[in-house]
Image 1: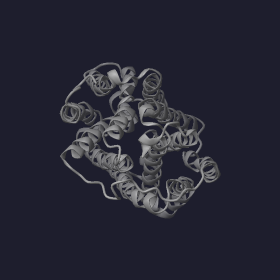
Image 2: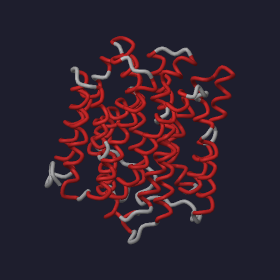
Image 3: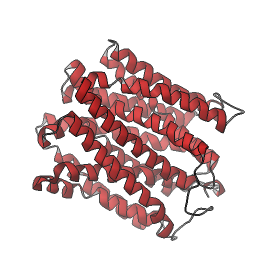
Image 4: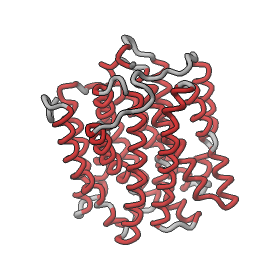
Length: 386
């Protein structure tokens, strides 16, 4: 149990951060690459939504497997298998050359990014004392910001040099193999580590609120970044190269807000940070939709603090089920993304990509209502400002 730690296990924290870095880079290649993937694979906007949704479905199934795998094997061995999968991008590309491109690439993106993300959180929580988790998880999530910021810049570099975009995926293999050997030789094998309370998570109304609130946040944040290049092209006529700095700026702001949380976040205003992380992006996107400059969009990266603060809150309230709750949060994330990608893809096909971007502030409004109700029930003595 994570609360039994008195001193941090740095190797677990570092490896968790690196898992997130590689997963974030691969995950956020998809958004800037969507116009290129659409062209090469002959996909329309609705097809792109289905392409992303198939990856989310694969991610849901893969993440479900993590709980029994870690119960029967170990966190170390499970991570080694996930990293090997990350190195198989060349195989997905070869499948695309044989006529299975859309499905193969969807499965590769979905499985690799979700497994790395889920295991990253398990590694960091496993190696961090409970009292330090809000700060360390914020630091860990900076790696997501770095990977996410580098991804569109890498796409811009490749397209400007007229190189094939497949190089970005094939290039993941040596990095993934290096991480595999670090996990293999850097962590001592202790075998399975079952949680107290058994293998099955017991659901109740409170946990449903926890998952639904997280799903609303995730749908809004990822829709904002994933469809940003397509949105900027449709509404403002920007090319992939022109929109990449704006997308990178979004992730840069996300990274900086998490960096500030790493150094300055205190329990006394933890919930205030989560409120701001939902309100500010909704206001920014609304202003841009109503005619504001697209250069305001990077400020939507103020989403940043919500993820680590929320994970820490869940870990604190469920100390005996923290690992299963972490995995189920990632499962709920992928369910939300699958529904979001299908929904936004269909909306973009019917109304156009620009109008479909209203999905973000509308979803954030309902997420704020869910979050208010969750805090009222989960932390009745503190409400908004604890």
